[in-house]
Image (cartoon, rainbow, N blue to C red; front, side):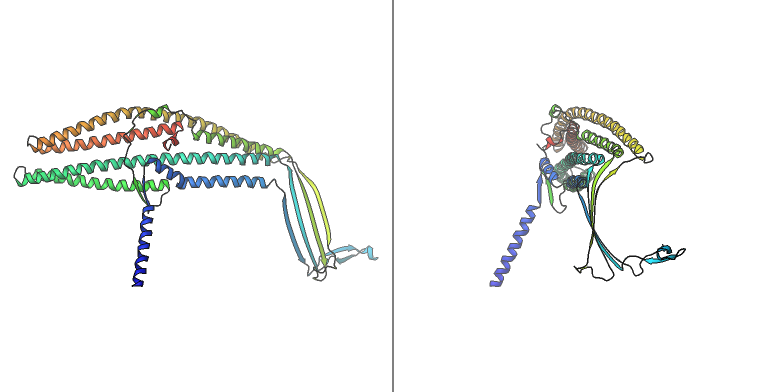
Length: 447
């Protein structure tokens, strides 16, 4: 009995953990919650953070070349055959002859410490400024990535809502067709309608069911795409909160203050980096000065007794300054400067083109927003009218005043009116999104 109780308790504990885990992986989100999740977990944003960190380390790498450089070196040499030199025979009273002489010892060992310190290098100073400026560029690129994620997630979210609305419409129409199918069946059994009429209703219901299943599949696929955009694991469940996209259909977003888009700031920073690159190339014409020092210990032995403290080690110390003056490099720096100047000119043209494109996008989005507002109102009225027509036609059909064709046509018209309305609402939201993007106000969606 004790063993059974322990087993039961263990199973219950595992079940509780499993239920807790299942609850943790269930997400029901609206647009704001989804955007906040995406800003925290998006793979693209996490990559941009790593790019920022890498840029900071690159600044440290550039700085390190201006700090003292110290290195150590050790060397051991063995001469089984020592080098031979020829000396004139006159030194041993043998004029006209050459005497071979071997110099040195069988073994030598040396140890050296070298140190250098950059005193002045204009190219290094310019490069340091460029490295620091690059960190600012990566900060702007991170902001651009965040805005891209907001835009992409919002667009995908509206697409998912559009599919969700279409599923809702077809679900509602399926219920109506199910009731109509049952009514027509009873009428057919009572010889009030023909078998052809009954079959037409069944065919319409089957076609609608197939379309509904296809929409549900597309909706699930769109949610999977949203998971990828916001960095959510595929095994976790994502549900969208009920849509409220048809609320607050106004032109309030046009009243936002327009800010300089981050795209223009990025181009300006890239242009500044190219200017610094040009200055760095020019700095290559300026002389550089560095301090250096070297301390060496050397021992020479005919026996391997380098660790005998009674045997001498000889020292050599060198300190000095090194001045490097560029004289002629075959016009290499000249051609590099010309290339850098062309890059600056290209970025200036790209700035102009980007600004014009952003202005065009804003004007187009503003026009679309205004037109969509009118279309939403028209489609809302059209939907209500189509609903009234369907209700009246259904009543007339039950009273055998209207035929089946009129009823099916009214049902189809009502379904299309509902779909058209939701499509216009989503079109309005997308135009609003484009306006916010052109204004540099995308993050107001979260706030």
